[in-house]
Image (cartoon, rainbow, N blue to C red; front, side):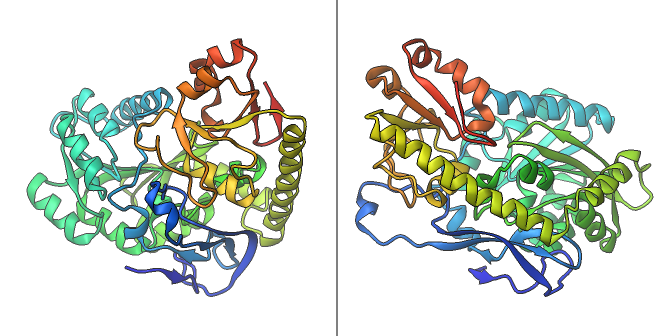
Length: 412
Protein backbone atom coordinates (compact mmCIF):
# COMPACT_ATOMS: atom_id res chain seq x y z
CA UNK A 1 0.00 0.00 0.00
CA UNK A 2 1.05 3.62 -0.40
CA UNK A 3 -0.06 7.18 0.30
CA UNK A 4 -3.13 8.28 -1.60
CA UNK A 5 -5.63 11.09 -1.98
CA UNK A 6 -9.15 9.90 -1.11
CA UNK A 7 -11.35 10.40 -4.16
CA UNK A 8 -14.24 8.17 -3.10
CA UNK A 9 -15.82 7.04 0.16
CA UNK A 10 -14.23 3.90 1.60
CA UNK A 11 -17.65 2.61 2.67
CA UNK A 12 -19.99 3.31 -0.26
CA UNK A 13 -17.50 4.37 -2.99
CA UNK A 14 -19.36 7.61 -3.72
CA UNK A 15 -17.16 10.44 -4.98
CA UNK A 16 -19.48 13.07 -3.48
CA UNK A 17 -17.24 14.16 -0.59
CA UNK A 18 -17.40 17.56 1.10
CA UNK A 19 -14.73 19.13 3.30
CA UNK A 20 -15.94 19.97 6.82
CA UNK A 21 -12.73 20.65 8.81
CA UNK A 22 -9.17 21.55 7.78
CA UNK A 23 -6.47 21.05 10.42
CA UNK A 24 -3.65 22.00 8.06
CA UNK A 25 -0.74 19.64 7.44
CA UNK A 26 1.04 17.70 10.17
CA UNK A 27 3.52 14.84 10.53
CA UNK A 28 2.08 11.52 11.70
CA UNK A 29 1.20 11.99 15.37
CA UNK A 30 3.08 8.95 16.66
CA UNK A 31 6.27 9.54 14.66
CA UNK A 32 8.38 10.88 17.53
CA UNK A 33 11.90 11.95 16.61
CA UNK A 34 15.35 11.18 17.94
CA UNK A 35 17.91 13.94 18.43
CA UNK A 36 19.63 12.87 15.20
CA UNK A 37 16.36 13.02 13.25
CA UNK A 38 15.84 16.67 14.20
CA UNK A 39 18.50 17.54 11.61
CA UNK A 40 16.63 15.73 8.84
CA UNK A 41 13.57 16.70 6.84
CA UNK A 42 10.16 15.82 8.25
CA UNK A 43 7.22 14.87 6.06
CA UNK A 44 3.89 16.63 6.59
CA UNK A 45 0.59 15.29 5.30
CA UNK A 46 -2.81 16.98 4.84
CA UNK A 47 -5.15 16.54 7.80
CA UNK A 48 -8.60 17.34 6.49
CA UNK A 49 -11.96 15.82 7.42
CA UNK A 50 -14.52 15.23 4.67
CA UNK A 51 -18.07 13.91 4.85
CA UNK A 52 -19.58 11.55 2.30
CA UNK A 53 -22.83 13.11 1.14
CA UNK A 54 -24.11 9.70 0.05
CA UNK A 55 -23.71 7.45 3.13
CA UNK A 56 -22.62 10.03 5.73
CA UNK A 57 -19.22 8.61 6.69
CA UNK A 58 -16.75 11.21 7.97
CA UNK A 59 -13.19 10.39 6.91
CA UNK A 60 -9.79 11.87 6.19
CA UNK A 61 -9.12 13.20 2.71
CA UNK A 62 -5.61 11.74 2.63
CA UNK A 63 -4.30 8.28 3.54
CA UNK A 64 -0.74 7.85 4.81
CA UNK A 65 0.83 4.48 4.02
CA UNK A 66 0.24 2.09 6.93
CA UNK A 67 3.90 1.06 6.90
CA UNK A 68 4.79 4.69 7.68
CA UNK A 69 2.27 4.93 10.52
CA UNK A 70 2.76 1.51 12.10
CA UNK A 71 6.51 1.34 11.68
CA UNK A 72 8.92 -0.68 13.88
CA UNK A 73 9.33 2.33 16.21
CA UNK A 74 5.58 2.82 16.74
CA UNK A 75 5.52 3.84 20.42
CA UNK A 76 1.94 3.40 21.63
CA UNK A 77 1.43 0.69 24.24
CA UNK A 78 -2.05 -0.03 25.55
CA UNK A 79 -0.89 -1.27 28.94
CA UNK A 80 0.60 2.03 30.15
CA UNK A 81 -2.61 3.32 31.71
CA UNK A 82 -4.53 1.58 34.51
CA UNK A 83 -7.71 3.01 33.00
CA UNK A 84 -7.03 1.13 29.75
CA UNK A 85 -6.06 -2.07 31.56
CA UNK A 86 -9.27 -1.96 33.58
CA UNK A 87 -11.27 -1.24 30.45
CA UNK A 88 -9.93 -4.30 28.63
CA UNK A 89 -10.62 -6.49 31.66
CA UNK A 90 -14.21 -5.23 31.65
CA UNK A 91 -14.53 -5.75 27.91
CA UNK A 92 -13.26 -9.34 28.01
CA UNK A 93 -15.60 -10.22 30.87
CA UNK A 94 -18.57 -8.44 29.26
CA UNK A 95 -18.10 -10.00 25.81
CA UNK A 96 -17.48 -13.45 27.30
CA UNK A 97 -20.69 -13.22 29.29
CA UNK A 98 -22.81 -11.65 26.56
CA UNK A 99 -21.80 -14.25 23.96
CA UNK A 100 -21.64 -17.18 26.43
CA UNK A 101 -18.08 -18.02 25.42
CA UNK A 102 -16.50 -21.19 26.77
CA UNK A 103 -13.07 -22.84 26.82
CA UNK A 104 -13.41 -24.24 23.29
CA UNK A 105 -14.31 -20.84 21.79
CA UNK A 106 -11.65 -18.67 20.13
CA UNK A 107 -11.37 -14.90 20.58
CA UNK A 108 -9.16 -13.01 18.11
CA UNK A 109 -8.07 -9.45 18.86
CA UNK A 110 -7.02 -7.38 15.84
CA UNK A 111 -4.34 -4.75 16.39
CA UNK A 112 -3.74 -6.42 19.74
CA UNK A 113 -0.74 -4.27 20.73
CA UNK A 114 1.01 -5.76 23.79
CA UNK A 115 -1.78 -8.29 24.36
CA UNK A 116 -3.76 -6.72 27.20
CA UNK A 117 -7.17 -7.77 25.82
CA UNK A 118 -5.81 -11.10 24.53
CA UNK A 119 -4.62 -11.97 28.03
CA UNK A 120 -7.88 -10.77 29.58
CA UNK A 121 -9.84 -13.26 27.44
CA UNK A 122 -7.49 -15.99 28.67
CA UNK A 123 -8.29 -15.05 32.26
CA UNK A 124 -11.97 -15.45 31.40
CA UNK A 125 -11.33 -19.03 30.28
CA UNK A 126 -11.43 -18.35 26.52
CA UNK A 127 -8.80 -19.34 23.95
CA UNK A 128 -7.37 -16.16 22.50
CA UNK A 129 -5.02 -14.94 19.82
CA UNK A 130 -3.74 -11.49 18.93
CA UNK A 131 -2.89 -10.17 15.48
CA UNK A 132 -0.48 -7.23 15.64
CA UNK A 133 1.40 -5.47 12.78
CA UNK A 134 4.20 -3.94 14.90
CA UNK A 135 6.88 -6.55 15.55
CA UNK A 136 8.15 -5.03 18.80
CA UNK A 137 4.66 -5.06 20.31
CA UNK A 138 3.86 -8.59 19.10
CA UNK A 139 7.10 -9.84 20.63
CA UNK A 140 6.32 -8.15 23.92
CA UNK A 141 2.86 -9.74 23.97
CA UNK A 142 4.24 -13.21 23.26
CA UNK A 143 6.84 -12.83 25.98
CA UNK A 144 4.02 -12.00 28.41
CA UNK A 145 2.14 -15.18 27.44
CA UNK A 146 -0.47 -13.61 25.15
CA UNK A 147 -0.13 -15.58 21.91
CA UNK A 148 0.19 -13.09 19.05
CA UNK A 149 0.74 -13.31 15.30
CA UNK A 150 2.92 -10.57 13.83
CA UNK A 151 0.99 -9.45 10.71
CA UNK A 152 -1.42 -6.98 9.22
CA UNK A 153 -5.00 -8.27 9.25
CA UNK A 154 -5.85 -9.31 5.68
CA UNK A 155 -7.48 -12.29 3.91
CA UNK A 156 -4.20 -14.21 3.57
CA UNK A 157 -3.43 -14.05 7.30
CA UNK A 158 -7.09 -14.72 8.04
CA UNK A 159 -6.99 -18.01 6.16
CA UNK A 160 -3.69 -19.01 7.79
CA UNK A 161 -5.08 -18.31 11.26
CA UNK A 162 -8.26 -20.26 10.53
CA UNK A 163 -6.21 -23.21 9.26
CA UNK A 164 -3.99 -23.19 12.37
CA UNK A 165 -6.43 -22.18 15.12
CA UNK A 166 -9.92 -22.83 13.78
CA UNK A 167 -12.87 -20.46 13.37
CA UNK A 168 -13.41 -17.63 15.84
CA UNK A 169 -16.47 -17.10 18.01
CA UNK A 170 -15.59 -13.45 18.44
CA UNK A 171 -13.22 -11.00 16.74
CA UNK A 172 -12.46 -7.75 18.54
CA UNK A 173 -10.93 -4.52 17.27
CA UNK A 174 -10.50 -1.75 19.84
CA UNK A 175 -9.60 1.63 18.36
CA UNK A 176 -8.48 -0.27 15.25
CA UNK A 177 -11.44 -0.41 12.84
CA UNK A 178 -11.11 3.36 12.41
CA UNK A 179 -7.50 2.84 11.22
CA UNK A 180 -8.44 0.64 8.25
CA UNK A 181 -8.34 2.01 4.71
CA UNK A 182 -9.49 -1.07 2.77
CA UNK A 183 -12.62 -1.86 4.78
CA UNK A 184 -13.87 -4.38 2.24
CA UNK A 185 -10.75 -6.53 2.63
CA UNK A 186 -10.96 -6.18 6.41
CA UNK A 187 -14.55 -7.42 6.51
CA UNK A 188 -13.76 -10.24 4.09
CA UNK A 189 -11.06 -11.33 6.55
CA UNK A 190 -13.59 -11.26 9.37
CA UNK A 191 -15.95 -13.42 7.31
CA UNK A 192 -13.15 -15.92 6.65
CA UNK A 193 -12.44 -16.26 10.36
CA UNK A 194 -15.86 -16.07 12.02
CA UNK A 195 -18.10 -19.00 12.81
CA UNK A 196 -21.64 -18.67 11.34
CA UNK A 197 -22.83 -17.51 14.76
CA UNK A 198 -19.67 -15.53 15.49
CA UNK A 199 -19.64 -11.81 16.32
CA UNK A 200 -17.33 -8.96 15.39
CA UNK A 201 -17.00 -6.42 18.22
CA UNK A 202 -15.44 -3.07 17.42
CA UNK A 203 -14.76 -0.02 19.55
CA UNK A 204 -14.10 3.30 17.85
CA UNK A 205 -14.39 6.96 18.87
CA UNK A 206 -17.97 8.07 18.21
CA UNK A 207 -18.44 11.01 15.86
CA UNK A 208 -21.24 12.45 18.01
CA UNK A 209 -18.98 12.69 21.07
CA UNK A 210 -16.20 14.17 18.95
CA UNK A 211 -18.51 16.89 17.65
CA UNK A 212 -20.42 17.68 20.83
CA UNK A 213 -17.30 17.79 23.03
CA UNK A 214 -15.09 19.59 20.49
CA UNK A 215 -12.59 16.73 20.41
CA UNK A 216 -10.84 17.83 17.23
CA UNK A 217 -7.51 16.60 18.59
CA UNK A 218 -8.86 13.04 18.18
CA UNK A 219 -8.43 13.58 14.43
CA UNK A 220 -5.04 12.34 13.21
CA UNK A 221 -3.63 10.27 10.36
CA UNK A 222 -4.03 6.87 12.06
CA UNK A 223 -7.77 7.54 12.46
CA UNK A 224 -8.96 7.36 8.87
CA UNK A 225 -12.70 7.08 9.64
CA UNK A 226 -14.94 8.76 12.24
CA UNK A 227 -17.82 6.41 12.72
CA UNK A 228 -21.50 6.77 13.37
CA UNK A 229 -24.09 4.02 13.24
CA UNK A 230 -25.94 4.95 10.03
CA UNK A 231 -23.07 4.54 7.54
CA UNK A 232 -21.80 1.45 9.36
CA UNK A 233 -25.22 -0.20 9.11
CA UNK A 234 -25.38 0.39 5.34
CA UNK A 235 -21.82 -0.84 4.88
CA UNK A 236 -22.24 -4.12 6.77
CA UNK A 237 -25.58 -4.71 5.03
CA UNK A 238 -23.75 -4.84 1.70
CA UNK A 239 -21.50 -7.54 3.16
CA UNK A 240 -24.35 -9.74 4.37
CA UNK A 241 -23.89 -8.67 7.97
CA UNK A 242 -25.81 -6.48 10.41
CA UNK A 243 -25.27 -4.47 13.56
CA UNK A 244 -27.02 -6.36 16.36
CA UNK A 245 -26.17 -4.13 19.32
CA UNK A 246 -24.43 -0.87 20.13
CA UNK A 247 -23.67 0.95 23.35
CA UNK A 248 -21.38 3.72 24.59
CA UNK A 249 -18.05 3.17 26.36
CA UNK A 250 -15.93 5.73 28.18
CA UNK A 251 -12.83 5.51 25.99
CA UNK A 252 -10.96 8.15 23.99
CA UNK A 253 -13.44 10.86 24.87
CA UNK A 254 -16.46 8.71 24.04
CA UNK A 255 -16.57 5.55 21.90
CA UNK A 256 -19.08 3.04 20.61
CA UNK A 257 -18.89 -0.69 21.19
CA UNK A 258 -20.61 -2.19 18.17
CA UNK A 259 -21.60 -5.85 17.77
CA UNK A 260 -21.87 -7.15 14.19
CA UNK A 261 -22.95 -10.62 13.04
CA UNK A 262 -24.09 -12.44 9.91
CA UNK A 263 -27.66 -11.51 9.00
CA UNK A 264 -30.21 -13.49 10.96
CA UNK A 265 -27.71 -15.14 13.28
CA UNK A 266 -28.66 -13.05 16.31
CA UNK A 267 -31.56 -10.90 17.44
CA UNK A 268 -31.12 -7.17 16.74
CA UNK A 269 -31.27 -4.96 19.85
CA UNK A 270 -33.54 -1.94 20.02
CA UNK A 271 -30.41 0.13 20.69
CA UNK A 272 -29.60 0.16 16.97
CA UNK A 273 -32.80 1.95 16.01
CA UNK A 274 -32.44 4.33 18.92
CA UNK A 275 -28.97 5.39 17.81
CA UNK A 276 -30.09 5.81 14.20
CA UNK A 277 -32.97 8.06 15.24
CA UNK A 278 -30.73 10.20 17.44
CA UNK A 279 -28.10 10.61 14.72
CA UNK A 280 -30.77 11.81 12.31
CA UNK A 281 -32.04 14.29 14.88
CA UNK A 282 -28.49 15.54 15.53
CA UNK A 283 -27.78 15.84 11.76
CA UNK A 284 -24.64 13.81 12.30
CA UNK A 285 -24.26 12.94 8.62
CA UNK A 286 -24.99 16.50 7.41
CA UNK A 287 -21.88 18.33 6.06
CA UNK A 288 -23.37 21.75 6.87
CA UNK A 289 -23.85 20.79 10.53
CA UNK A 290 -20.32 19.39 10.69
CA UNK A 291 -18.89 22.62 9.29
CA UNK A 292 -20.16 24.38 12.42
CA UNK A 293 -17.98 21.99 14.42
CA UNK A 294 -15.04 23.05 12.24
CA UNK A 295 -15.71 26.72 12.99
CA UNK A 296 -15.82 25.99 16.73
CA UNK A 297 -12.46 24.21 16.51
CA UNK A 298 -10.88 27.25 14.85
CA UNK A 299 -12.28 29.54 17.55
CA UNK A 300 -11.01 27.23 20.30
CA UNK A 301 -7.55 27.22 18.71
CA UNK A 302 -7.37 31.01 18.84
CA UNK A 303 -8.68 31.16 22.41
CA UNK A 304 -6.23 28.56 23.73
CA UNK A 305 -3.21 30.12 22.04
CA UNK A 306 -4.05 33.54 23.47
CA UNK A 307 -4.59 32.02 26.92
CA UNK A 308 -1.22 30.24 26.95
CA UNK A 309 0.60 33.21 25.42
CA UNK A 310 -0.75 35.46 28.17
CA UNK A 311 0.56 33.06 30.83
CA UNK A 312 4.00 33.19 29.21
CA UNK A 313 3.90 37.00 29.18
CA UNK A 314 3.29 36.81 32.92
CA UNK A 315 6.48 34.76 33.26
CA UNK A 316 4.75 31.45 34.02
CA UNK A 317 6.41 28.12 33.25
CA UNK A 318 4.20 25.72 31.30
CA UNK A 319 4.74 22.10 30.31
CA UNK A 320 2.58 19.61 28.48
CA UNK A 321 1.51 16.56 30.48
CA UNK A 322 1.32 13.44 28.38
CA UNK A 323 2.51 12.88 24.83
CA UNK A 324 -0.43 11.07 23.19
CA UNK A 325 -1.03 11.03 19.45
CA UNK A 326 -4.02 13.33 19.90
CA UNK A 327 -1.76 15.81 21.69
CA UNK A 328 0.36 16.23 18.59
CA UNK A 329 -2.64 17.11 16.42
CA UNK A 330 -3.51 19.62 19.11
CA UNK A 331 -0.04 21.17 19.34
CA UNK A 332 0.54 21.39 15.59
CA UNK A 333 -2.90 22.77 14.75
CA UNK A 334 -2.82 25.32 17.59
CA UNK A 335 0.78 26.39 16.82
CA UNK A 336 1.97 25.52 20.33
CA UNK A 337 5.70 24.85 20.30
CA UNK A 338 8.72 24.91 22.65
CA UNK A 339 8.46 28.68 23.00
CA UNK A 340 5.29 28.02 25.04
CA UNK A 341 5.78 24.51 26.46
CA UNK A 342 9.19 23.73 27.97
CA UNK A 343 8.65 20.02 27.46
CA UNK A 344 6.12 17.21 27.47
CA UNK A 345 6.22 14.90 30.48
CA UNK A 346 5.38 11.27 29.88
CA UNK A 347 5.02 8.00 31.77
CA UNK A 348 5.60 5.75 28.73
CA UNK A 349 9.33 4.99 28.55
CA UNK A 350 9.18 4.43 24.78
CA UNK A 351 8.60 8.17 24.24
CA UNK A 352 10.93 9.64 26.88
CA UNK A 353 14.05 11.17 25.38
CA UNK A 354 12.40 11.78 22.00
CA UNK A 355 10.89 14.91 20.43
CA UNK A 356 7.28 15.54 19.45
CA UNK A 357 6.61 15.41 15.70
CA UNK A 358 6.27 18.82 14.09
CA UNK A 359 6.75 20.95 17.17
CA UNK A 360 9.99 19.24 18.31
CA UNK A 361 9.11 19.73 21.97
CA UNK A 362 11.32 17.41 24.07
CA UNK A 363 9.63 14.53 25.89
CA UNK A 364 10.89 14.01 29.45
CA UNK A 365 9.88 11.72 32.29
CA UNK A 366 7.14 12.64 34.75
CA UNK A 367 9.81 13.25 37.39
CA UNK A 368 10.48 16.61 35.69
CA UNK A 369 7.32 17.93 37.35
CA UNK A 370 8.54 17.14 40.85
CA UNK A 371 12.12 18.23 40.21
CA UNK A 372 11.35 21.50 38.43
CA UNK A 373 7.83 22.30 39.68
CA UNK A 374 6.56 24.40 36.75
CA UNK A 375 3.51 26.59 37.27
CA UNK A 376 1.12 24.92 34.83
CA UNK A 377 0.70 21.56 33.13
CA UNK A 378 -1.36 21.45 29.92
CA UNK A 379 -3.08 18.06 30.12
CA UNK A 380 -2.85 16.65 26.59
CA UNK A 381 -4.16 13.24 27.69
CA UNK A 382 -7.33 14.93 28.94
CA UNK A 383 -9.34 11.73 28.48
CA UNK A 384 -7.30 10.23 31.35
CA UNK A 385 -7.36 13.37 33.47
CA UNK A 386 -8.59 11.77 36.70
CA UNK A 387 -5.97 9.03 36.68
CA UNK A 388 -3.16 11.39 35.66
CA UNK A 389 -4.01 14.08 38.21
CA UNK A 390 -4.16 11.42 40.91
CA UNK A 391 -0.77 10.02 39.86
CA UNK A 392 0.72 13.53 39.82
CA UNK A 393 -0.84 14.72 43.07
CA UNK A 394 2.59 15.84 44.33
CA UNK A 395 2.70 18.40 41.50
CA UNK A 396 -0.62 19.95 42.48
CA UNK A 397 0.12 19.70 46.20
CA UNK A 398 3.21 21.86 45.63
CA UNK A 399 1.12 24.51 43.87
CA UNK A 400 1.14 23.30 40.26
CA UNK A 401 -2.05 23.76 38.28
CA UNK A 402 -3.52 21.57 35.56
CA UNK A 403 -4.98 23.09 32.39
CA UNK A 404 -7.73 20.96 30.85
CA UNK A 405 -8.07 22.13 27.22
CA UNK A 406 -11.06 20.11 25.97
CA UNK A 407 -13.95 20.87 25.56
CA UNK A 408 -13.44 24.19 27.37
CA UNK A 409 -10.32 25.65 28.92
CA UNK A 410 -10.37 24.82 32.64
CA UNK A 411 -7.77 25.32 35.37
CA UNK A 412 -7.60 22.80 38.22
